[in-house]
Length: 117
Image 1 (cartoon, one colour):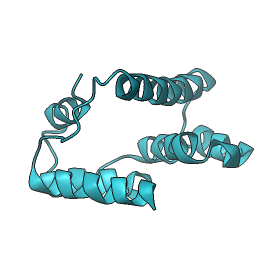
Image 2: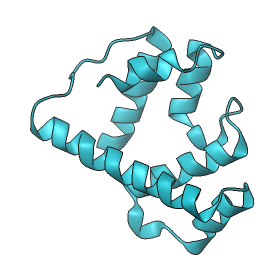
Image 3: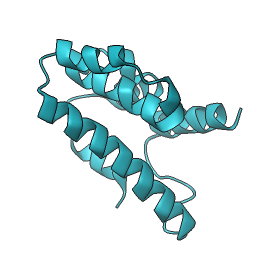
Image 4: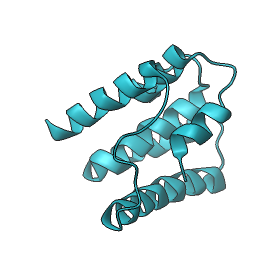
């Protein structure tokens, strides 16, 4: 599955520059509502620093009106994506050179550079 292509197909109302901004700083992207920003902030923690997750992170989700079921779904989806992505990399099933608009490719390169630092 090409998630970049799927993301672009479902985000026709935003520009490539706005999409790149979401990738670079999903927790404060103005194109998203507060629930989406809170979910993405938590997903980032789950991905990079799961040991830093606190009750306040879950409370931030509740404060946006998400139900307990929505919160569990968001956490499960983030964890599944981490698992599936790593499995795909291990199996050699991931495009090493992503395709897409230049703004998004630059954002992805910046993100990768940050992970390698």
